[in-house]
Length: 330
Image (cartoon, rainbow, N blue to C red; front, side):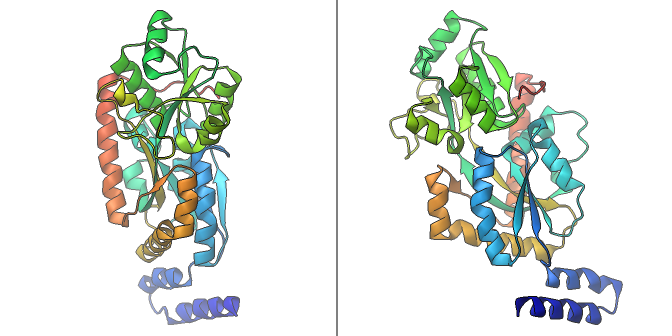
């Protein structure tokens, strides 16, 4: 019955389109008629992937079509943004918009796309708390001890990030600047390989989204040194914030959903409505809370303004700190 009804609506819309101007409306009414691709610029197993795989089944059920996650890591999420920016604006390709995309606007020269011009905002998703983690063998057990250890061993302590230009990277650079220490930045192509190397001892310290490291912190494979946000996490209330030691330090992450610019407004509104319904659903909220995230609900216009503000904020940080892209380490 559902397929027959969808086919009927499609044919009826096509028959009623007496002018070229009516065709986009008919297409939007028939949407969606096939599976959607959700492009995620990080590898499986990290925080971005986990959140996407929580939300994708909800969205698929609401729109009546599969939502297929496609992991396209690399270049601090620039590959994923380029993939979506160059896709047809028909509502069948979604972008997982990470905070790093806002950082990249200033960090990288001559990007083949313009985030604010080429990606149409759809909705917010969640806030990711950031956490500084360490291999348990590291002598430092607190932020204060880490700073003292790094000052005693300049240039000998490595700090991993889940990508050059990512919030993980700039949060680490901000920490080094404010603490007055020198640590070697080691970028990875996502949180999962970064965490694996911290656990294995290849790097001593890293900044990750709590979503990706929580299970390892609980198992004892990683030691949580400090939270990046303004407040302690309800999930790890005994872990102090970095700002409790380094006055004024604060860093967080976030993500949302975008589509290629030119996607019909009716489709964007539909996606926004269904995603926000999921973020408000008690079962979905519980699953997101289990992985240490907080929903952020926006209209498309509100999310567009939020992205523009983040581009401006991180642009100031990058210009003042002199951070430049580095080759990826993983």
